[in-house]
Image: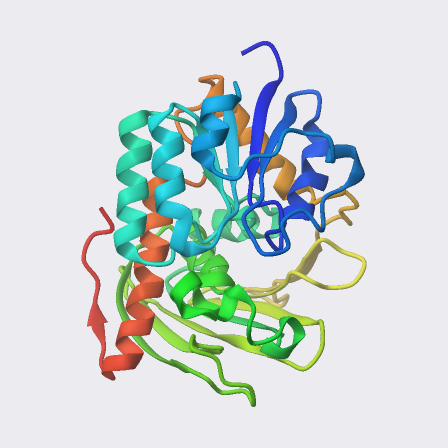
Length: 354
């Protein structure tokens, strides 16, 4: 593939739409944004002037009939994602799907089947798989530097429902099917599996509406996930902060070391506080600060790495991206199970992701 990839963008006013378009500028020598399909009520209200003259279409069907393009970013609400991705895959278009890709397991299974059958390059918006600190934690576990893995804990609290307003599509059960765990904590559910290299075997949870503004989807909660090694993972978070803000941190504990990860530490691109054994007089104590990342666009350098991984799969240089249809399905299935376990008040065993 020698010429630039012609890219259609479906879902211009997605909350991350502008961030994705800013990110594309970093690879504009390889990708040309060539057509748009508005999806949300805002239509093109956030569209930059540089893209204002691009062809716009009311549907994916109209886009496919009218434009020659190679690939598409799909950033639509969960209710529409399976139909749109199936249509694109059947037409042989490479697909980058904004997380969570699907809002329920049955749709994720449809997407996986369609993409796998078509053999197109598939990538998702789970950018943390390309983060420096995340990959250092993964290497620590892969190399056995934690000893026996005991626990992984993540906290993810962010702006409350009122920042966007309870009428926003993210809180509409008909459009999104689920709330905080589908839209945001999906990042940590996906990353947990990636960093640990393990599958989730069982789920216990309590989710619901805990803040002052009620919506039809969960605004947060807590989940306890059993990993195949016997380690446990605890996730807590929600739309719980009364302003535009976020609180994110992880702790991983093993029999030989423990690490605190602060992805948002000022003047870094994430920081690891590493505490290890004391075999003689000196204990192992270290802080690793990832270099500041000023790369423009959604996700910065990890976002650029994600795009380049997708391009490499299109060119046949890699067999699959770091995100796959299988990893996407596994995360959606865990989100579904978290909601089910809370509703039924019981611990649920998980079968294979497929």
